[in-house]
Image (cartoon, rainbow, N blue to C red; front, side):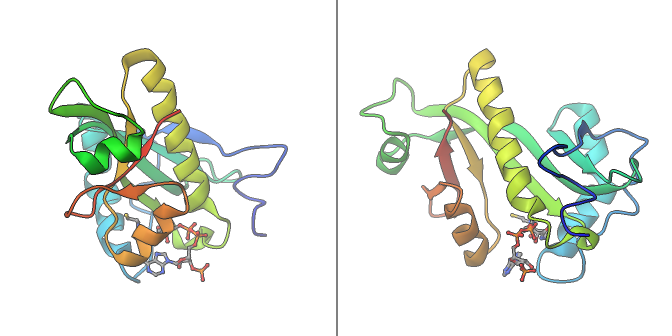
Length: 175
Ligand SMILES: CC(C)(COP(=O)(O)OP(=O)(O)OC[C@H]1O[C@@H](n2cnc3c(N)ncnc32)[C@H](O)[C@@H]1OP(=O)(O)O)[C@@H](O)C(=O)NCCC(=O)NCCS
């Protein structure tokens, strides 16, 4: 079953902006680690934040049950203070401003029924590509993430993110 319901080489992920017809109440990241925090956010806050423009929430849905959300992520604009580690990570000699702008991959979650399908990595790739598209239209130098623990920081390193702040924030330059 793995890989069949959500994506195949012939049929990539079904991606949609979060909307009222999606079954937010049925989404569940499971009881482990940060699952309950992300589940609560998605059930109670994501749609409202999306409607207000605080973030844009994108969902990937089940092929056979289109209202069922298998995974989601949020993106929003963000700026970081320029320092040596930011310049180094972005490959810049200098920056014209004290703060520079990019995008934040704020929340990311995969429903526990879809574990093992590598949906998390697929959604990180989609977030990077959405941010790179926006960069061409409205500017923005990087995608940022705020990993909730060292294991997730290591996981994000695998996608090319580098820690640039004592808060743990990581960034990756957009192509
Ligand atoms: C993090 C997450 C999006 C990864 O998605 P995924 O599709 O499972 O990604 P992968 O296939 O690369 O699997 C990662 C593996 O690490 C595990 N893992 C996930 N978060 C972990 C953590 N914080 N610490 C240790 N292991 C973790 C997963 O259980 C999985 O293990 P398995 O392959 O033995 O089942 C998903 O596990 C999830 O929704 N977690 C709950 C919400 C969350 O922590 N979001 C990130 C906030 S920054």
